[in-house]
Amino acid sequence: MTPKTVLSVEEFAALPDDGMKHELNEGELIVMPPPKPRHGDCQLRLGSALRDFVAKHDLGSVFTESGYRLTPHTVRGPDVSFVRKSRLQNPDEYFEGGPDLAVEIVSPGDDAADLREKIQQYLNAGTSVVWVVYPRSRQIEVHMPDKTIRTLGIEDTLEARELLPGFQLSVRSVLE
Image (cartoon, rainbow, N blue to C red; front, side):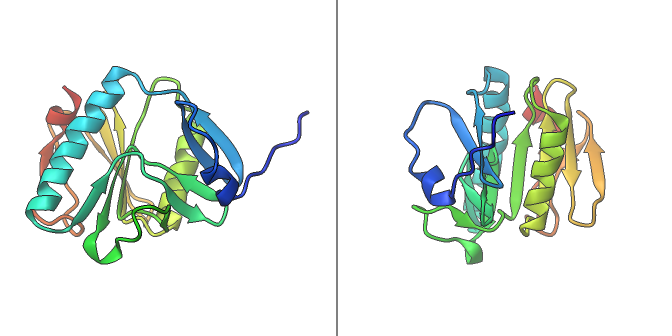
């Protein structure tokens, strides 16, 4: 068995751009191929709706695929994320801690165990809510720090009452 190569966050940050998406999980480099169009469409729909709402209410910032240093050796880049205005940091560095909201859009080849680990890492790093979007089954899971999971179907409405008061988005508008 080949020994695992462990990178520091500084080494990770210095990697050359190879056109792939990268994350760092407890020092291990994770390489992901570019997403397919369905993934990108969901990301744009959800990210645009969030960004419009957040900007209108001056609540903070919405990002796509931006890096968050969740532990000393873990950097994750959720597909979409939101950070409250009071928590914004240097935009040229990885954000220290989790976003207030993390969104992961599941692609057909994603590993369920890896996804569960990522969700738990966000929540452990202070993320208030994680939305997991399943484009193929047309569902969105809402994960909370108290370990509750709510599954929304195509007829439901996505919201985060405490974090984004007044934000409502139909699941249908994200997934169709």
